[in-house]
Image 1 (cartoon, rainbow, N blue to C red):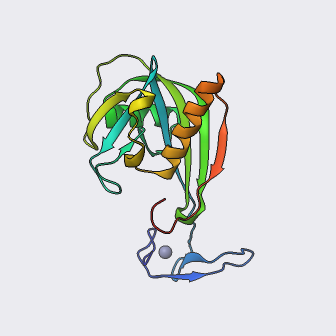
Image 2 (cartoon, rainbow, N blue to C red):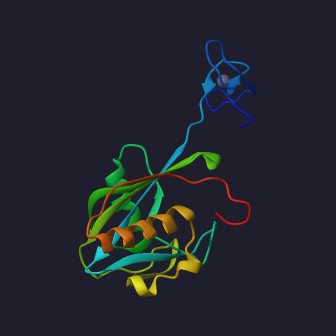
Length: 181
Ligand SMILES: [Zn+2]
């Protein structure tokens, strides 16, 4: 950040009185511009034994597969955000179900929240951020072409839970990885 979004003056990085971390503080109006983690919300959309995956048409990880998920917007709940992202990326309507996984990704300041969801009909198609949207059986999941560690971990848990006969909530942390995450 270089300029204050309130008055347009330059900002400086400094620790405000009573705080413990450096913040961008406006040199003119003294507004403190806090920066906090972003929430990514999404879902595993199920249709019978299959789940919906989207092949990304945008960076990062263009061309790789993911569950529908994206940045939560102001004014919506996490479940509403998951349903909205599924509609935007896959033109698919879902009934959002139980919370399934939450991942902290501290090195990129993100929190991933993924629900299980029920696909309401088969009238889906690629949204503008997707190249392709498909239902996958477990045997056909493109494990080597999954876009994100969060999604790969979540799907690993998902199929393991399915085999065990019980879906339970998973909390995890994704650490920085040297080559791929
Ligand atoms: Zn200012």
